[in-house]
Image (cartoon, rainbow, N blue to C red):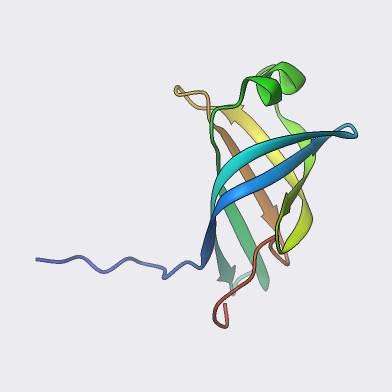
Length: 103
């Protein structure tokens, strides 16, 4: 039996830049997002692949950053890294990636 996903979340997977205190770090990201009708905002989130330079700058802590992809940039928040060293990244409103359909 095939299970349908709860959300058909639009997203982006590929190269990005995380800007931490005016320092740019080239990273790989996997991002998704969805429109939340309760608060009327688009919420986007994802993971940043393991990157030692980013970890050296953030030191495993939460950080306010700018996330830039080839199609846009937005303020974002990095959360503590998971067990594999990948930081969670999240933001609200217009995402830093192109939406293929109305979200």
